[in-house]
Amino acid sequence: MNVNRTTIFRLIQRLHETDTMSDRPRSGRPRCTTQRQDRNLVRNHMNNRFLSASASSRQTRGRNNQRISANTVRRRLSTSGLRARRPYIGPILTQRHGHQRTLWAHEHAAWDRIQWRCVVFSDESRFCIEHADGRVRVWRRSGERYQANCVREHDRWGGASFDGTSMCCCTGSPRGAHTLLAGACLDL
Image (cartoon, rainbow, N blue to C red; front, side, top):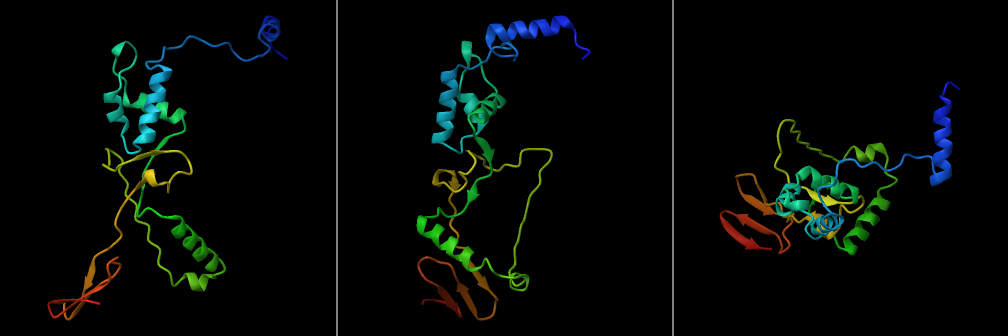
């Protein structure tokens, strides 16, 4: 087997002493935060999901009153299962909304390619390689994307369309549609 006898002897001795063959814990570099501080970091980010790691690092002092880095905060949050993700931006959905979306999905599950060709899907992505992109991030666990405290609420009323000649129709308003006809605004 091309292994030294001393190595085998030490592995057997470690197995008898510790009931495991894995390595013993090593000292390594001491952690700059205590377990209590780690729990406080996680609690703060669970209460304020949009708190950035750099802002949290400025507020938290480690052992011996030393500053901690934003990467330390990210590692502590990562070990607790939190990841920085782009938030879902949209209206907060109620259970009724979720039920209606599920019904819609079941109604359209049997559509064929010809029917889906009439639907337009758009996916606009931004890519930023060199610097921070200025986007707000939310700290969340897997499966928490649509939870109310992880959603950045946005009013979906999109405004108006106007062809410049006669009529402007605003749709999507929660208060009803408004029509501009020859400069006058009429409630319908």
